[in-house]
Amino acid sequence: MTPLAWPAGGIVLAGVIFLFALWTLWTRSRLDENLPSFVDGALTGGAVESAAPAITELTRGRFVRQEHEVVGTARLLELPDGRRILRLEDFATSDGPDLHVWLSEKAAGGNWFKYGRGRRVRLGALKATDGNHNYPIPADHDLSGLRSAVIWCRRFHVAFGSAPLET
Image (cartoon, rainbow, N blue to C red; front, side):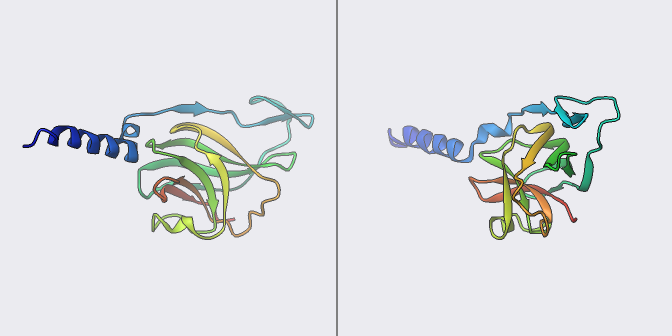
């Protein structure tokens, strides 16, 4: 073995670790957000036991595995003031590089790559690998025809998992 083989191998290994963000195989994060609450038409910070206006569930679906194991429920909710959110409940996935939450016109499950094309609504970066999260849906987005919630890895253009949200 030449004297340069070990350093070259180390550089290649470091590149693989960086490119594939291998440390995410062992990292986890947790966030538990409350559902928004309303009292007398005003938004408050947490759950309130009162005759507050009801939050309407538009649809829900259980996550299915695609590139990685993803579990939990995705719920499309309409708040009393008309705003809408995607709520992930009892959610868990492995960590990954550059994970995002999308709504897509593509059906849940199947090909990992299909969500990269077609109509989608980007709701932002995944807040944590575990817990209960709320993702606001921009008011100007029409939800008709959107069929799934997707955990999307932008670095590798694959779905970690998806949940059916047929309305």
